[in-house]
Length: 296
Image (cartoon, rainbow, N blue to C red; front, top):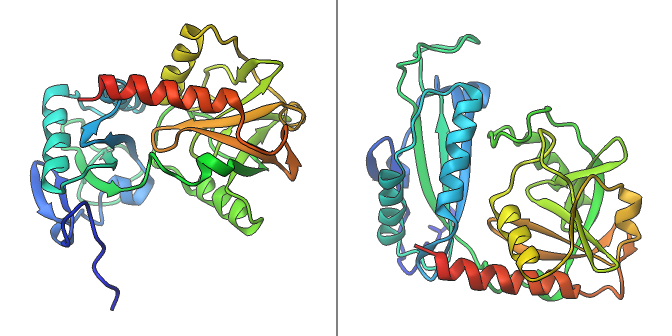
């Protein structure tokens, strides 16, 4: 029998939120007929928690609403109520540093059918916490190594759905190759990482793919680019090839759970001197400083 995991500072199971109730994790159950389970008909968000405070909440809430709207899920986000749920989970789980995962599905129609259920079918809303070492991730000092894989996802990657099987396969390919992650390639150009936005730096210019249906509109991405511009760093939003990436001076990724993380190797090619680049480290510092000021 596996030992009970440790969450926060309490040696007990997590308290999770399910459709209005706060429950011990072992009591939280979702129907086998839920469309999130049967069709991956669901969206999600992940917010980071530092010092017991929530990072970039407003951006995640707005993207959640956009995802629902794009998929025709009849749900109107109440920002105040959702914030209260996040705060309750932080308190109930004594979460100091980690993440809050939110998943919203089209609900349980009572049977399996490809056709959407009636619009008044209640959604299923689940939130839970995850403790993680976000600030002192050892990869900050060494940098990440990535491989490239073909991007075989569906075309609406701008919607944050739970259709994550191929990104999981990409991460497993990276693990099998003995590296940290995979960057996905379409028509020779980098779209994004398996769970993050991708960037290169060449001659002091930060280059990242432009927004569109091909990539997730990262909340951390938007903040980091804004901070870069305010710091007088040159930014170019355009598609770049994997060959450009291998010839870059440095590279990095951004996501809610990694913030800004340096990349030092792509497909076995070492970038620069093989150590985390100055631009990535500066942007990480800027992001953390500003985000902690705005945390709620």
